Image (cartoon, rainbow, N blue to C red; front, side):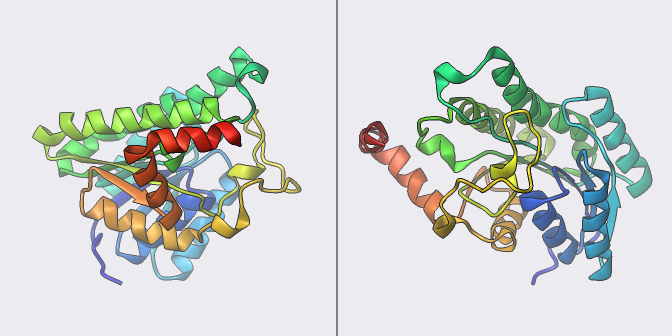
Amino acid sequence: MARRFDDKVAWITGGGSGIGAALAQELAGRGATVAISGRRRERLDEVVARIEAAGGHALAVPCDVTDEAGVQAAAARIGQELGGIDVCVANAGFGVGGRFEKLSGEDWRRQLDVNIVGVVQTASAALPFLKQRKGRLALIGSAIIYALPPGNAAYSASKAAVHAIGQTLYAELAKDGVSCTTIHPGFVASEIGQVDNDGVFHVERKDPRPASLIVATDVAARAMANGIHARQRECVVTGHGKALAVLGRHMPGLVAAILRRS
């Protein structure tokens, strides 16, 4: 494994499980000191322990990405204790599911507050540090934006917004030497399918996603780390995610016809 993040400090939100935890371990394995944030302190401590057991360095910095003051405080603490921020991954998010007519205004507000405002607040808090180091920003979107299936209007809209924000920041931050990589994963092993529309995790809940398409988190994390290091504008992760991107971009009519029949 190439140690491409030696002497770098990486901050990852949603770092207590799934993609965030796997990416934290991947970047630590490549030499980074990793700060991980999330709402569940016990989960963050577990990830820190795994990283340190493997010889890496990590710091748990609990925060809720919907709390602007808390996000700013988390970034300030990381900057003070670790000396700065070279990489920021705005990963925290969840999915509100259900057909459009079944969703309430509160469902929409909750979805957009976490998946859009949370991403924006994380990026905003990290940017002063990233500009000092000509660092790397990564926003976690979803390959769902290339298909937009029924029953996912709120989640799809939130990830389409992340895509738009990421493309804008890629251009805006160029003059500062800061890259912005928008990452669109397909189905990756995580707890997202076990979290309800209120953002509450249910350990007994069955993940509704097709098991045959779910990719291991460590495999996805390697691809994501490569894209961040290369300062790619956009990075689609997983084979089916890439196939979906090609179909969505070049044959949107076909995709729409298939979805109408689903």
